[in-house]
Length: 281
Image 1: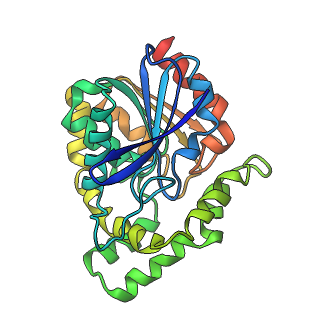
Image 2: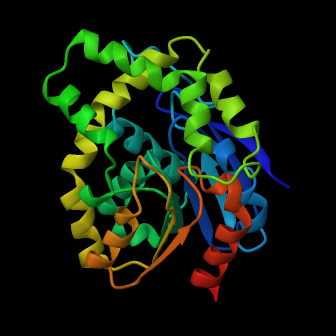
């Protein structure tokens, strides 16, 4: 049974999904953009047979509180701190973590601050290397270095239905991706203030890239078991980002799947099997 719950962190309600026996090892699932914990709807039941699974929504995403961007700091530092406090409040002292997209800079901030918490890592298109940045990041670099209101407005295209649908379908075989995920993500874009809070995070993403050397140092010093399972056709975080983990962590296994950015949509069963075999086998 999956439970759907809320907990208050700072002044915000954090929604999360929980499944599995709490006596089993805990697996924390950190979602990406433009999604929320529903992206793990197929994975959670598969992992819950072996793990205690927790999947939160960040503030401004999914069913968690979404305060106005003028009253809440939408930065990755702040979201990471809230997720750290979330784990502390749930008394989760050690866990495996699954990081995807935005979940990577959030999860690796937590791992860097608390290496003793981390039992192992799954990075599914969760990049922390320059080698993993696709061509679109050149345009964002220009926005970060020379920001203008006009350039900021251009990024509202990231929230258009066709853009979100494209993120799900690009690089996948026809008929292998359910519409459920992208239609729910599209529905969330209609919530009050959605674009403004997400634009704050797009601008702040530059600070994640600046922290890549810190995240890589964490890997070199701690060498956690790491499974880099990647949709190899992802144009945003290209598969060279998966291969780069091996430079810093000898305990890395890389698996490239014939899928795109949201590889879970087409390969949840395969990814679950890889996780169970790698960490429990």
